[in-house]
Image (cartoon, rainbow, N blue to C red; front, side, top):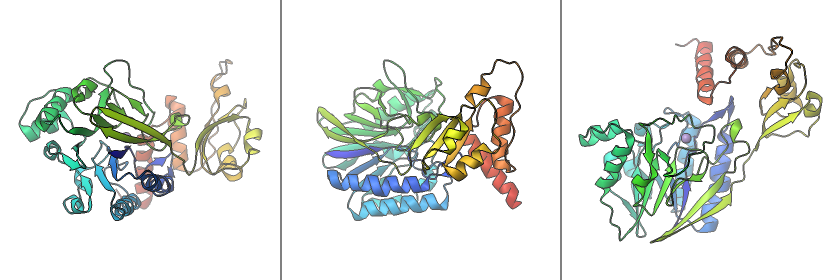
Length: 371
Ligand SMILES: [Mn+2]
């Protein structure tokens, strides 16, 4: 049986203030649905982080609603779990009724021990879990995710004569070597939250979400990564579809390219060169190689060449050895743009996506005069 493994859609995500909703709609409707039809795939697995935030925007809720309705109308079964960005309760809305239409959303850890059987394959849907969740649901006293996850696998009582697929959203570390990050995960590699990939070794395939860079963490366990580039650091990262053909004792993964509505690029050049580049709607981050700050550079770049210019940096000025401190000219009157610059000037680092999201939200509320 063939299924499509997706994760980390982060519907509603904004990249430095720019809404990616149109890019996400394009991905789901112009890329994913046609692929499912062309390849004759009738099972779609989404391994968590469906939405970017626990209380998603109206537009992102509409997008998911449109998409799963389209899948149901095409008789494509959809299996979903919440990731750490999702609210289990909100994601579970309607899920008992959706089952009748082939849309399976498992948000309660207790339900993850009952497989969803489709064409002879047992799918186990394990929502994002912490050991506290397992302790609460099963009256246990685990002190880390690894032992709690091992316990959950035990509860599943796998029938090894069947094909068993696990869908999970966790920090699973390879038995050998290191995990590679995409850049937009906001993941802290501690010890309590790690799960060793050997915990899941009994499954024929483990469809993982959480890490945005596609990679294998074991012979049978794979992160397919986020479908879109959600951070400037992911500009050069390959993202692709994971089509999984699973049979007993044999798993075959086929990669298909994902074509995006707008590319994410990092450009280097002098201001004069950048301004003269062929205009494009792509998301671009610009490294200005000039040796002096250019007044209103970002506004001018957005107006002439790149309306989706995400930001810019002056690598040459940052590395001057004159010893003089250069104070950047703030070329904006908007607090949304000033605050990130101020933060960067004081702390020498950029706001994370989550932080800028929070700042934007708070400024928005302040503007509206609400609390
Ligand atoms: Mn994620």
